[in-house]
Image 1 (spheres, rainbow, N blue to C red):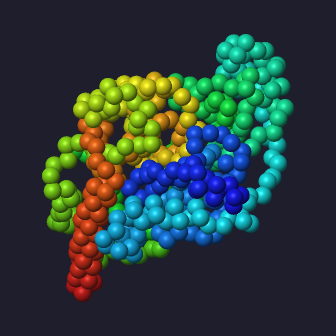
Image 2: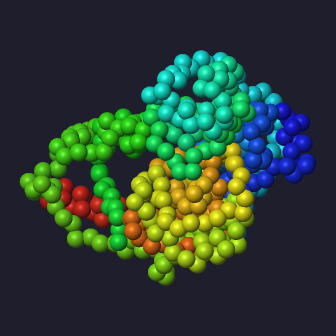
Image 3: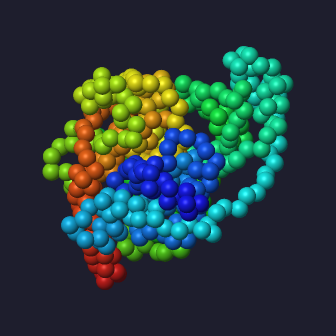
Length: 421
């Protein structure tokens, strides 16, 4: 393990690229290789026990490891003359010189019962036709070997396994398809088991009596988990508070009191007419014509738009049609689908993806994009990592001022109310 990492360092056979303003990927190539994956997992285990300063989490994939950092925390700790992205890149290069002995993962053998009956195996017949092989032979080839779990990603419990026998390997579908929990799918040599404003937000003073799921109180509707019974709120739902407090005197026996406070939520000095992005790792896979189109023509948010992702109407072309192994993605990743359309990953995005990542929306512009809705036109404008960080810092300074102002007003309101009562 140690020699392998050092060999990669010496040969320059790994590279570091950013997938957001404060998240970067250590990439060892677009390959599915058991030894490389073993090294990625070992590196991941090392980071779990020797966390980098400001590290939020790390996501291992087939042949890459992505590390996410707390931008605000790092900005306070590193010298002002140094950019956060420069510090991150330097720390990851230093990481690659460490000794990872003793952090290899233990192996366990898990047996998964699978049903190949027609009503469940909806694509089995088409695979048989495509590969010119009998259904019985597909079942035999698929079930007669051991598979390695290379990574967990996309959604909780989603295992990427491989490698599939070459005779039954098929490409991903052109468009993403709805999948039932427990389904087993083939994607190349991989296969997976699937386990003006458009929005406003309500801030609640007291804590709601709901349980955390994966260290979060939010609801993942598609997974049917988290939040309140794993679903959207409905009329007549009642959610209690963890602690009961009396506010009748403060409200003077009214159901509510509207406070005459207003705040400017716009932090940008100029009107934001274009969503700012920086290049993704697969930007150069686009044709020159498609690059110009991306930066100069509008894209319309399609009807498939939710907190997981926005599909954009408008077609781009890649220079070549090649498969990518799945790796980590981030809020704001712009992926090129096989049919030429784009999808922008939003707040509830999956953790990993296998489509080309042509660009990333800078963090400071994600709220503007999130307030868009189906039918809206959006334009993109290119920037670099340094300017993306400057925008984020400007936004964070505004939010901090807003937070302090709200805190002061609320304390003043409650203190005055308590004195009068």
